[in-house]
Length: 261
Image 1: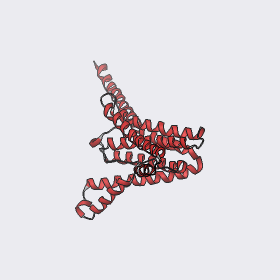
Image 2 (image 1 turned 90 degrees about the vertical axis):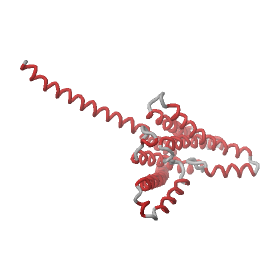
Image 3 (image 1 turned 120 degrees about the vertical axis):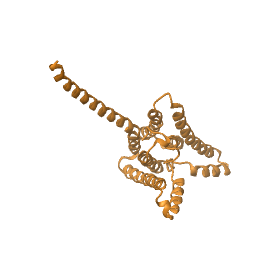
Image 4 (image 1 turned 30 degrees about the vertical axis):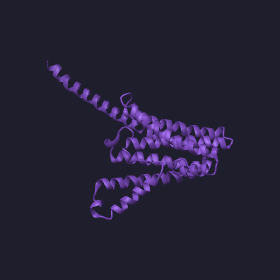
């Protein structure tokens, strides 16, 4: 999922990455709405809120919303910087996995704080919402960067527009036979349904475990981060196993020849 970059990625790579990251984003967003009454998977609405607060002269509230927007931006900036500057220093997998690990740390930190320290003050809420927006910026920056902007999983506004365009294009038979368009349609549907299912899952999970639902999000992200590591380990294990078998076979074949000599 994370190992390959841009045009080297397959449709399956994008489907897995898009589906799982959208699932985690949907979970995060719904739990945030339940706990903080705030959306944290995107910042589209916050631009309108910022303008509204400034027009009313609510400078503090406007500054907080602007900070939230900047935190999402900084998250995306950090994610892309790690990918760009990590090339040549680390392996491609590591440079792609680090933003996910930072996202896990941010969301895990929010979950732990809610569990043990949260006093439900306004300042705490503002800080925690900012931390989640930073995490979502990290995720959106990563998925967009390594997929050549094919995957954007933290908000569905642009995705819905793209789906509508594709559906209108499929009115023509030749477009329905276009493999690239069909694959894009399947990818967008996967992201859409994964986001919705993630939201439904977190809503149900929250009823049973409360703020620990953020830990479930972290588990999903860990699967994304370590899937390629596990896959590489298994490939290496099977390669070494076949290599050892070949060596034993060659050794057995050599023994009769040595005895004849």
